[in-house]
Image 1: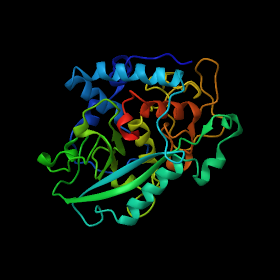
Image 2 (image 1 turned 60 degrees about the vertical axis):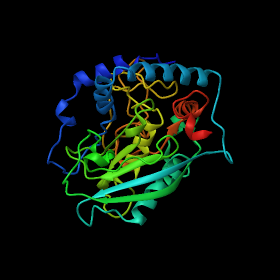
Image 3 (image 1 turned 180 degrees about the horizontal axis):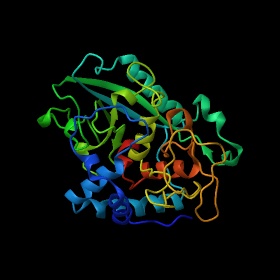
Image 4 (image 1 turned 135 degrees about the vertical axis):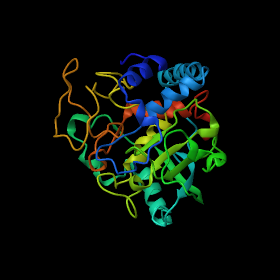
Length: 319
């Protein structure tokens, strides 16, 4: 079993190795060549701004761990948890105003990936066949909110989530998942807010060129997996390498990774961490390209369902 790491310790390890410039406004909105998720960097900033956040997150983590231990889950409807989704589109140009078809393609990807009906699920190697999982979450498009803007790009300071700063306020964030689709600066593909943060900024932000699998979506991030990865964070999953060398993602059945993997690693890629396990590079919470990530593990499923269970930080979505 991987050791529980306090939120502050995990973030300190990450933030000491990060370039703080990733969090600053930039005119550079070029498409990234490698996956760049800023969820942990944003969490570090939120912890600095809100001294009570660490306490809340650690308290929730204790509840989640206890829910897992007691095998507690959320109330299911026809075997799944149903999540209404609000898509907030911020656009300056016509191409940035992503189509309804592109939005629906992203909802389709989320439903496939979280229900193990994605076509590439069959590619999971035999090494991990015993732990590949159907999480069992249904995402339903609730509404699309569109707003024209003069901004060329947005940073990770949550301005896109605030009408007072030119963005769009979240809709019913305690019962609906809000996605913001916009142009992001600094080569960032997206970021999510972890459970425990303020409801006024809760949700997931996705680069419009990495959203869905049609329209403006561009390779190698054109299969909708950026949203799958970021929604994984929103559902309380960590990066599979634990944001530290041979770190912990707080899940027992994922191998210990040296660090993030990029592109499409060769099959059987081994970690040099203790025991030299084969890394689960095809896991949605690694940094591989869209075409090379296609599974969640049973331990990740248990962590997600425990987050929805009684007392958990997403319990309001499963009442």
